[in-house]
Length: 73
Length: 522
Image (cartoon, rainbow over all chains, first blue to last red; front, top):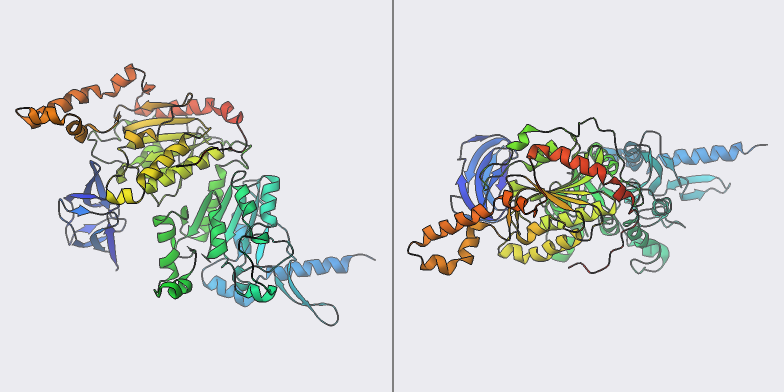
């Protein structure tokens, strides 16, 4: 088991938080949706695991590379 | 009398060379999960095709009887071989011999300049560098009795630079490289490294620690996560050495031997008139939603033919080589999963790829869904405008035919960069296409501010103007004006493009040779 940082690939604001701590996620699942450049950009996990932390809430600004969630996988 | 004793001596010395740095050094190298340079060369090339040159070069010492007492092979192995039956020049440092540092031969074998680069140059054949050397050593001064001026004489990059305009050059970073070998690795058309095994930097951890007092591991400093995924210094990442060799062979399969030839055409069993139903609904009706652009490309090009270049870097754009009807094309597609925006990384990636395709007579197909340049303070600080305009400048210098499939958004300055209006070059649009100098949302407020603010119900007036303009934005109106050359059923994309790509081959044949470019890039 390792802790995996899930980062936003793009600068924008949080549009929707789709996952919550305790959720089991699969590779390819969307955890958070970022709004950037008038687009809804999914933040996807490449690893399966359990969500341990969601570090943002709706309307929060996020920077490229910012850790928005952590999963234990 | 015969020459058999001398002939036997040649064979004996060849066997000595095959021992690389000796059983112990080879075992240590293998224990690190790495293959020797000889094993690597054998695996990259067609079986049995390696014709080594300079196998007897090395440091010999002789006994009093004048017989060979000890032999250390030159730490560089190279020669001629074949990939898919086509000749290639290939070479690499032997890390098991003094970490692949130079050995001061009369004529350099390879690494920076040397016989192997002359071979690629003189015969106009691709060059493969298997880089696994640590660069210069301060010991050289001891050997020579003086220190050398960098970039002079045998160590120059003159030939390496010349090759960039003539034949495909591939660099594979196989181990940890710094200094000269790092720089040489970059002078190529395409590079690859092995995740977890390869690191590349200007200088390694001990030098960094001495300079800044900070401790970093070599993986943190120059592993694939930094060098490929973050910086784009190296193009592709392999999961293992075998994967690396497969990717090298695959990359070269799309390219001609040199700039005077056309890329090889392969037999195609995927019907050129294949119309995929999924293309009619792959783009969501909401222009805010993302979709899988990679899948879209896969549905259009020959089955399994897309080979991505820089797949982990600048992911807002997808660049790759593919085939349509067995003929090679260069694909550039905006990736809506990353907003499709042109940020500085995507711009840099696109400019490099366009130049690569143009150099080797590969026509270009853009799949456009681009809302514009990435905006904001961070993006401006990273010179998005300069990188973006450079991408457009490079795009307008190409000599190969260019097609643009406007899948969805095509806006503004960045949108202009996916379209080439010179000559025949044309664009076909899907019904989901929308374009303009900037998107309606936001644009209306800027252009009609006074009118909106003075209206009794400003919000309503804004919606009315937006609706009025939205109707004008229908792609059918633009098609009526022949301002977009065609509006097509997305399912027809493959047959449409395949037919034009077949027809343009005579044009490619008419313009072989080095690309001479004038001007200064912005």
